[in-house]
Image (cartoon, rainbow over all chains, first blue to last red; front, side):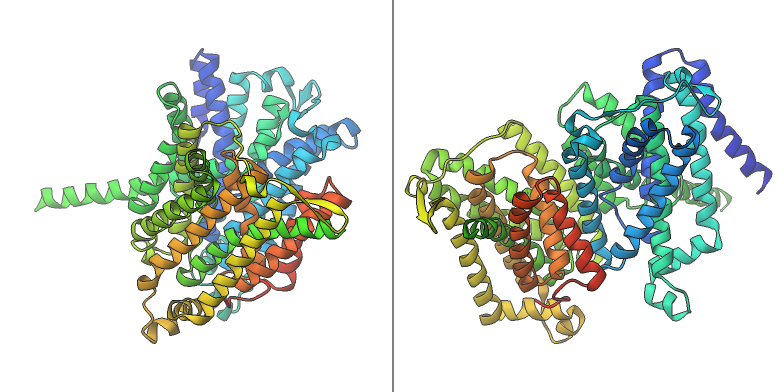
Length: 322
Length: 282
């Protein structure tokens, strides 16, 4: 990694702690903390879109399940809480991989339809299995006083959570970036572009595609864990397909061309929603229209603005020289 | 038991009339219309308002006519221009349209649940197999059966039907043979939209109207077309009937798991046949 790149990562990582230290508004800090949860949610959705070329309408299941798993398993005191938290993320990844082995076999576009069905199955389970999930009332998490060496109070305070979740988010972004640039990441792009040719070159295509779904679900699950720790509460709303839809919109808004696109999209979505909510009740129409316009006119999203701006500057420089 | 089978048939018939439109559109254009549940919802709400003024049957016809017009608009403004952009673009754009449709319904009709009364002729119970069965539900089964027969005759007996079947079997070869999907697509989308809208009206007395009805039917219809085989109306027919029965039997025998059964069916079929029961044939 070049020094400049390393510096960029350090700067990115320090933005969150800086905001936590410099701002005093708990409301703003809380908003940004929540935006980081959504950013990880969207990062997972965007990873799937970028590496597999597939849209998911069911990722809320992977976002909400960690909360439900922790809520159901923590009272049993089977393992240290920290181990349990990490295990849920790994388990979600494995679960998604196994589901993936089945549903990525379907016709490309059918995948999106199937994720909707899988996601809603989890939602139905969350509302129906009252003994386990608390049904529509939701489930409170009983967390210990200390987690990973931090007091629970710190984690449930806007400034504390903002710092922790921001760093985790940057770490996730780094993992996704490394994955995307790796040999395996490039193989998945080849499969995305032409599965038949990739198979002809001698690669298995089913396992990599399912693995991308697994990784994408795990990244989303990390966001879900942060959400669950912060709120100590999970409800069926968090696993409803509309939550998946929002994350998909964030990923499209940010653009899946670059790994950071969905993260940027999540922040833009969050602050747009917050600022528009006081003016209008027609958020659904606004975001629906925005989705249509971006999809049709500017499919590269926010991430596409950077190469576009660079190209523009180069052209201007070229004209200036001539 | 026979009554349970009939109840399953009621939901199966409803699923078929909605899902068959999805299958037709996929067959012809290789697209998935995420706003299909919204067409069903809009039909139900338009039918609700129209039947307040003119009675149920006029309401049903009005909803069908409005939705057919909307279908022509949808084809001309969305499916046709985006034809070359790949199915993902259409999926996302129709997702955006579904959000707008939900907002529209919220703004015009509000978020409260509305109910539409069954027409007075059918608002009674018949005695069947020793128990009483609402006459209206028989009408729902009849509606599904009429739609199925009409679609069968249309697909097998007309030139447009031939085009649809050819395009869904192999879009490239049928295009080489000179089949212009653009020419029949407005009609196919209009028929699909009208079917979805009328299904919404027909379902309204039984299921009541709410803005969430769009996604409820969409999830089940997606399962139907994926399990039946994308683009296959025949596959959608069989899967709808099976899913209808599974729903009812689930409620009787394992109420907690009913909502998960369609999902298990879907997983089981996909493990066995990834392209769905009927492959990609109509």
